[in-house]
Image (cartoon, rainbow, N blue to C red; front, side, top):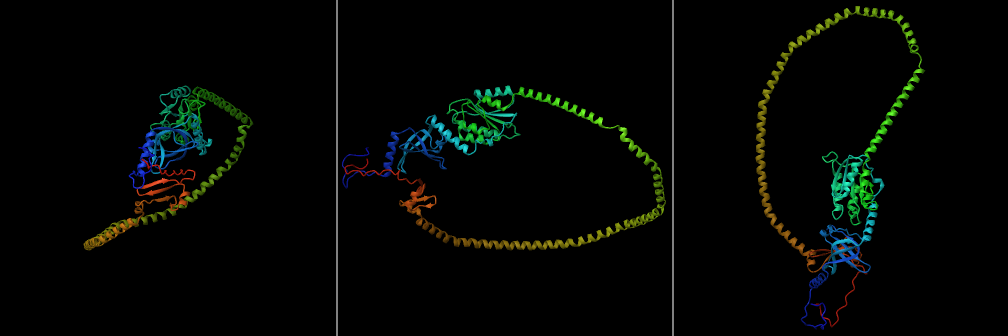
Length: 523
């Protein structure tokens, strides 16, 4: 089948086949997918869109042309390079058409940067964006602990890096090490490293697994592509948010990754990271010995100075007898007056005691009267208690039958009220059921008439006749001028909505010339 036939166009009434729009779109789709089954396209990414559906829409462009590209949700999650506007990439996928908008697009399955230059440009752009958020500020970096009890190491368990770190820690200051094994390159590097840092921070301080006081993220040297996992945004953000101080030891001294800017300290090599983490034990012991000796010497010197000062002060003091002689003389003067004063005090007390017998006899009479009164009251108390108990017993015996009669009367009234209320409730229920049976059918019939009227007057019936409704951010769009000024809107058909964007004058495709008289219709 050919798209154009050079035979003269048949006149009116001929039997030429008439194609539908869907048939033309299907034919174009088969031709395009047959000629370009799987392609690799090199270009610059522009206009990246990530809707809530999870799909990624972007453009691939060069200095003259633009191709629309899309990566579906499942494919976008597996892309090794995230699409970012402005970087040059090589996209692998297949060409197809989108009949809804009469355009072709590239279904992208894999994206790789077009050379180291593109990676460096993307790396610099990402570094500036993260630095603008304050993730690399020196004010938020924490000091490293001087002597950590537990060190967490995030690295590959099978490489030479972990052996170098353990060997260096053993030589300098043996301490406890927790290793979190991760992939240090490839697609799983970034999520595993970020999960390891978050896992160390999530450990409880008093849990069965000790929480590290320091984290070391280490990897040996490599190319820019090998170290790219440590440049991912997720790793940088997790490193910046770590509550535990973190040392970055990724690559050699000349290698720089974004985690180096977000960490609290950057080490040129993994071995240097171990040296930063702990001091040298022998040097620390020697320093402690020196400080101890200095402290002993200082204590001795201080004691000698205090002893010498005490001796000097003792020389300035006079004889002890000179301090006690005035007090002894005052005591001798007072001792002569002490004996007459004591005799006068004893005489006054004796006179006072001689006047006491009269008071004591009055006290004895008062006590005797009170004792007689208490004996009389104690004899009268049992009789009074018996009389009071008898009166209360008689009162209770009188109240008992009255309470029983009142309770029986209240129970009878309550039973009659309940029976009356039950009968009244049953009558109301029967009336309610009869009212529902009488009122429900006409109300249901009226509701059905209103629903049929709603369906007849609704705009869905208009959509069935080939019309469409244009929805904008601020409501419905009814004028072409408003649609041209709206950056994005949706067109609602009978079976759903599609997103649309107004075309600028430079993007409007040129109208195809009408076929000549001597050309036949398609196919």
